[in-house]
Image (cartoon, rainbow, N blue to C red; front, top):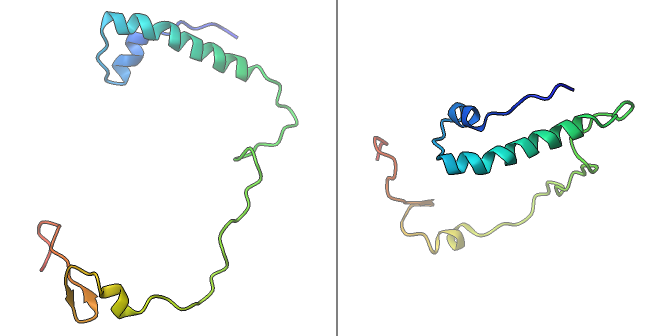
Length: 99
């Protein structure tokens, strides 16, 4: 694999980051280490390994949708800051929304 030099100043420019010379000096070896690690990972032989989305089997952890009793409407509205009939009455929070 051909070794490509990574220019942290160029990467920072692409990301629209303004770095000081001191920051560039700190980040340059860090970025080089990241690239080395990616190169190391890409050298692993994965022939015969099926692609996966998860490291562990995904199990549907949702409960069955069953109708059951819920809170009484009056109990739900008991602590409402305001109400109109059987609905919550809240202040308008979006400009331009109809009252």
